[in-house]
Image (cartoon, rainbow, N blue to C red; front, top):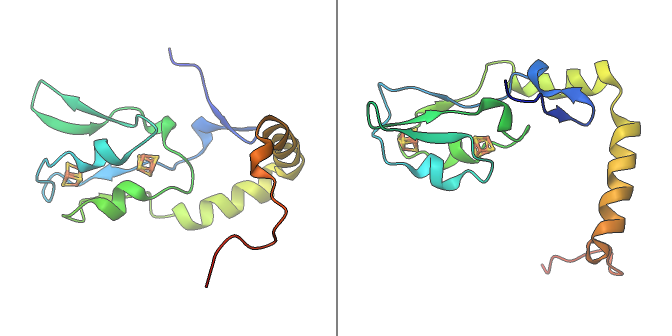
Length: 121
Ligand code: SF4
Ligand code: SF4
């Protein structure tokens, strides 16, 4: 059995954030698999289709595969928008987020910059 992942302390199994493929629209182009950096999709040799193989690996808040799908065949659970907000409130994740940020910035000091703006207009 796969080990449960977590999102800032929230068990990943409690978060319904994952892509759903509508196979009546899907043309089997494979862009979803190529565009996902989290290993959510797999190619099923049994029927030659791309499948959501590891839904709990989906990065919460990401919708890249949905946006790149040329057939508009990918959707997310209908409550996805309010889901994240509700989790933040229910699990009071900010202390965990603060700790993770400190760890991240210690590990990657190049994420700390002197300038307040890095985007040229
Ligand atoms: S990107 Fe869309 S059309 Fe292409 S394989 Fe994935 S779901 Fe199907
Ligand atoms: S939403 Fe992002 S992380 Fe999740 S399956 Fe699609 S591309 Fe991968």
